[in-house]
Length: 264
Image 1 (spheres, rainbow, N blue to C red):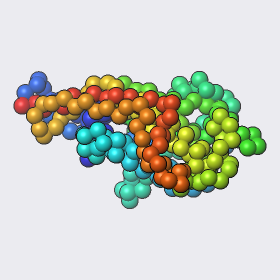
Image 2 (image 1 turned 135 degrees about the horizontal axis):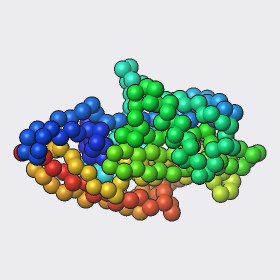
Image 3 (image 1 turned 90 degrees about the vertical axis):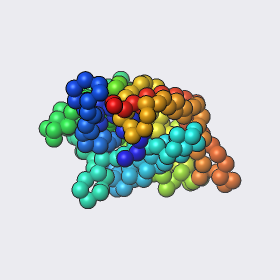
Image 4 (image 1 turned 30 degrees about the horizontal axis):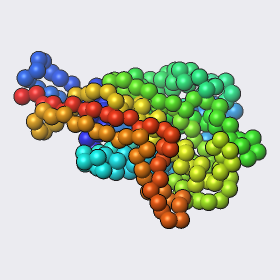
C-alpha cells in the first residue's frame, strides 16, 4: 500500500493494543472515499465516473512524482474501489436545489453526505473524503462558482469540497480550444489546469498535510520531512514546448511532517 496515505490516515489504519511495547494491529487499508453530490435541480454529468477516474489518476501521479522529487519515494494515496476494481463513487442526492448550497455551505453539504453514507456503515468523521459537487454552473460562456471549494481535516480524517463539470477532464489539459473560464475566458486546457490543480490543493488540506501522525513502519523509528512546497511543478501538456508549469500558480502546497514509529 502506498506509504503516504498509510501515514495520513492514522486512526483508520492503526489500532494500538495495550501499552507501548506490545502489539500493533492494522485495520483494513484506508482509502480516499469519493462522493458525487447532486442538488435537486441537477443531474449527473455525462460519463462522470470515467472522467473522475482520469482526474484522480492525475492527482495521484502529481503527489507521487512530487514526493519522489523530494527524495521520499513514490508516495501517494489509494482510491476506494469495488470488488471488480472499479472506482467506487457514492452518489448523494441533495435535499435542496443548487443555489441553496452557497460558498459557505460546506457544513450543510457535508451533513447531508454524512447522513447518506452512515446508512452504508461509513462514518466520514473517520475517513478522508472528496466531494465532487455539481455546484459550478454556466451563464453563457461564463462559469459561476456556486458552492464551496475548500478542504480541511484533522488526525482522524478530512474532507475536500470540489466541483465536477462536463469540461473537467485530463484529456483536455493540452487543449488550446476556447470554452473555459477562470476569472475570465480561457482555453479548455487552462480551465482544467486551474480546477484539477485546485482539486490537488484542497485534497492536500483534507489529508491533511502539515500535521503530525504516527505510522507503524518496518524500519526503525525515524522522522520524515516531506516538503511539497509552493509552486511544485508538473509537466504541463497545455504548452507546445511542454515546459514545466505549476498546477497551483498562487496556491501554496503545504509542508507535511510525518513521524514514523514502531512499537518494539
